[in-house]
Amino acid sequence: MNRRGKVCLFIPCLEDMAEVAEISRAVDMKRNIPLHFMLLPGVVLVFIYSYWPMAGLVLAFQKFNIARFASGGYFASPFIGIDNFKYVFGMPEFPRVLWNTVFIASMKIVAGTVAPILFAILLNEVGKAWLKRAVQTVTYLPYFLSWVILGGIISDILSSDGMINQMLASLHFQPVFFLGDNRVFPYMLVITDLWKSTGFNTIIYLAALTSINPALYEAAVIDGANRWKQTLHVTLPGMMPIIVLLGTLSLGDILNAGFEQIFVLYNPVVFQSGDIIDTFNYRIGLLGAKYDIGTAIGLFKSCVSLVMVSVSYALASKFANYRIF
Amino acid sequence: MKRSAGKITFDYLNMTILFLISLLCLFPYIHILAVSLSSSASVAEGKVTFWPVDFTMNSYNFVASGSRFMTAFGISAKRVLLGVVIYMIITAITAYPLSKEDRRFKSRTVYVWYFVVTMFVSGGLIPTFLVVRSTGLMDSIWALILPGAVQIFNIVILLNFLRGLPKELEESSFLDGGGHLTYFLRIALPLSVPCLMTLTLFTIVYHWNAWFDGLIYINSPDRYPLQTYIQMNVIEPGRRVRDITDLDVLKTVSQSTLRAAEVLVTSIPVLLAYPFIQKYFITGITLGSVKE
Image 1: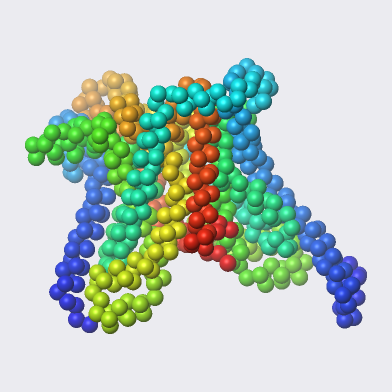
Image 2: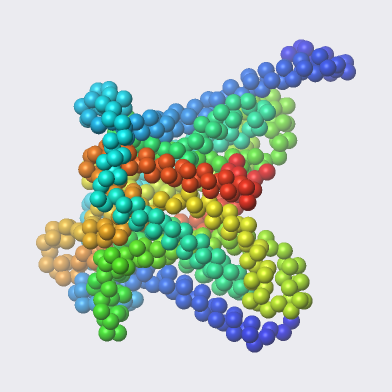
């Protein structure tokens, strides 16, 4: 440390500069020791509960043997190549499950993008602050309740003798089995998902709206634009960057049709239209204890998702200048 | 500026639409509340929409006397408490080192990648389940806490917040002879209280609402957290009303009124926290988006 004195006393030459850099690096290294200790618990937990399961993906290529697994871990069961995948793709339900997943997820992506944008624009036009806040309070609430709670409420209201059907009956309509009819079930999933998340998802669009320069609106008014034209030519273009960003990022969700929601709302009658990869995997792999098959299904989904996520991030960083860190 | 007739019409139309949407969001709760406060007979006859018919508190009395419900409530409360303490400590001690500059903390890049990879790649349902089982956590409350204890998103939010603190604070603290720990505990943490509040609320809601982990990791029904209990006993066709032997109670309590009451009681903690949540979540979202 007494070398430091030299730096203070003399005008440092190049060699000294290098020396100073070296010293400060050494100081940093010593000072940083607590940082490594702080990271240790997180590193250990992530290793056990994130990286170790990744090693478990080898199960997808094995014939799982519970006795061997218990004694020797992941690598003890015999390897059988891609037979598990052949089995999964050969299952009669699989094409339907895959289709349901993509169909429900894409409907949710489109509806879940359009509805919050429209809702944010309507909210933004409200002049009275208290009214705006009241609407926000009411519409954000379902987001914070779990699907178990919402599922309890939804299945009560939509059941065959529930409130909606009683209203339909009093208007002399046939009852609709909202949660028991394959023709309507997927759409009920989209509607109930909108109920839960639309309000909350407006937050980010409202933030985008407030960042639009008011001068643009003033200029538009002078040019004779009415409310509708202002929305079309100022508001929407102003929101476009965030719409493009969130739209591209949602590509990564193409196989995420909403496990928790479907799990609490579906029943065997609507498996045909509502069974998705995640619920299928849960029933076959976990409930049926076919761990090798379940891992193969999970790995298939992860691979497709990873590709989609990478594509979406590449697009997002290219078109919207987005980065995570 | 004078408002044109068109604008006034639009304003009223807009308010009507928003009002209707809000009502649509609100009706389900009101209906459930009305059902939970009505007698089972009037519910079965379809008389109850938005106002209790044959007002009775019996469903709530039954819920409060049901020991399994109260046990599950207690387990959830314990889970929230343990979860918040552990998650917040891990978030803070992980976010702080990662908020340092690469230049001063050379291994940062390695650590960042180590954590970020897990955002995109995971072992999936079954390998994770097998790991939790082989680490001996099955049927224990720790199975609901440890596997998700490193919340990457919360860490990213906090580290972005820490990066926003003036660099001079750290430099002067080092000049005064303090190390990282002094700076972290004495300066960085106290300054991050608003951000930590937000993350605490995130964590409370996360733990209160989680139910799927309880379903797969907990085998004994008397150890279920509340939401898992609700999922098992309320969503799945119930079998408990059959246990009621008191005929007077049976006249007023049915599967639907009971379910309504349980669902409402379960959502009470979130409803109580909601004013704070609303205030802090929104700042939380904007916090996460602040980047240099």
